[in-house]
Image (cartoon, rainbow, N blue to C red):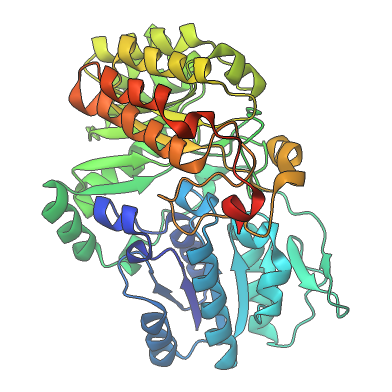
Length: 466
């Protein structure tokens, strides 16, 4: 018996629990489907709606697995933030499984960045890349012998016996994504998700992906699992999964968890045609880049059923987005937002505050862009240094003991930004007020301009990172 588990408990993150937009661990379910094809017996512990680690321990007791894979949903952007609470929870789960005599493997952004933490907690292996390549190979080895040597299995990070970590051969990601089975939806308590969504929002949403990775090079974006490779399913394969979700899961809405949806106008046009041909149209939400959302693309998205598009705008200052190596223009944002609205598609923006060298004037450019284009919704964060990025290398010397947020709503500056954490939280609130009120809110910005926080020197390391 193999027990697969996720460790992202919604109730461990106040912001996410209050939003109540739960999605099953998609990457974990894909591995489950692959293992079944290989003849393994698989059980699932889905942390999303579970109460805590005690529930995981109860599942261990009930299933008595020989192997446990704690595999994060690497398609879910929340796992990429590597919050302290999720790390602590995962380490407890590793220790609990190991205490029961199980072989344990872990996969996720944080374990890829900090494998020693997970190996010290008892993990036999950390998977360095995509779990649906290396975990089935690991499971087969353990099926033949629970003491099988692991150094010949590609894609693993292992304890070297000297308080260090050794890495086995590089593992390539799956090339033909159409050859993968559909996720093992039957392992999920679908009705629990339906009840949560219907109670909070009056409709039921589900997740899927059409691709893996992102080929672009924003210098703050960490890619510990997929790197910069971009692999894509065929439009017809994706449309068929939509039809199955519509008929079998009875989803009212879909979230495409891709970092970048579609990529080309040709793919998206084929996708729209495939959705129509299969009568698979379900309202859906995607993430995309402003410079890819041409009039032709937006027309195809509308035809396919797109309801909401999130764009990584980051800043209204071209100087700041250039510093981020974003590769888009403010003019692209304006054009994309207007095209989406003209087709009745909600245009939503991700904004990022506090990137090094950002000034008050840059913040005002962001505010003014919001005022002028009126996005339907925004998500606001501050620059968050993650290992392996150019941005992290830039601010590494400023980082103290604390390198991660406790939860996704903390919005704490972990390096010496231009302004303080409380100031950026006020800017976030003012920007949300601009969108939520649908009107200019000069009072908040006047307060920000005159507030003593604006004129303080950056936080000392002990305050920002202690």
